[in-house]
Amino acid sequence: MLRVKNICKEKGIKFKQLAEMMDVQPETVTRILTGKTNPSLSTLVNMANVLNVEVYELFEGYNADKEVQGFLKVGNKIHQINSIIELKTLYDEISSMG
Picture 1: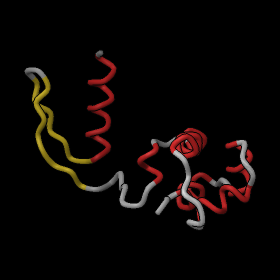
Picture 2 (picture 1 turned 90 degrees about the vertical axis):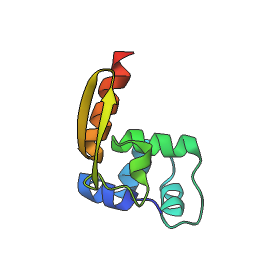
Picture 3 (picture 1 turned 60 degrees about the horizontal axis):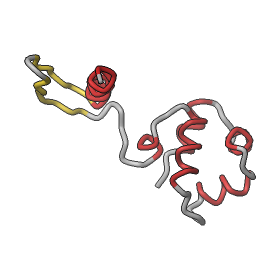
């Protein structure tokens, strides 16, 4: 199930605005959000880009505050991870190193 309704509410975006920003018909967004149609990957990417979130954040079960704990060794450095956000931040740092 998509979390788009919650994300739109958090960002103060109406579904009609979302459709306009995605350059699709409002009915398309409604069909996706009510489960009457499955969105394509390109539609999900478009929706995530418009909402300024990652695609995986559109789905139920994603919780940025969810507790994740552990240690991760990258090269010679050990990182303590306490949340999904910290894990994503570390991933982004490592990815940008090339």
